[in-house]
Image (cartoon, rainbow, N blue to C red; front, side, top):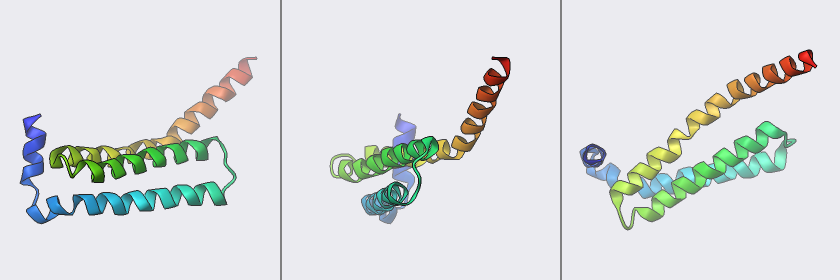
Length: 110
């Protein structure tokens, strides 16, 4: 736990102060992308999952900006946590491929 706090304190002071601004900007971009997905695509299963993940990312980033007022170290953790959800989005096509392979295998058996 103290190692993560030390990581925050090792950041430049100017960067520590703009964490809420970064969080709000990224949150607005995330929610605008969710709005774009909702309005301009045929909402298939994968698009719904992508929208849900982006919404969770946006909420996490927005909470990071609000939490910054109370605890800067926790806000840094929320910012990093929200951005690490992007890895799930990168894995989403692989997960969908595996689901299609399993679906095809089950259909071939029955």
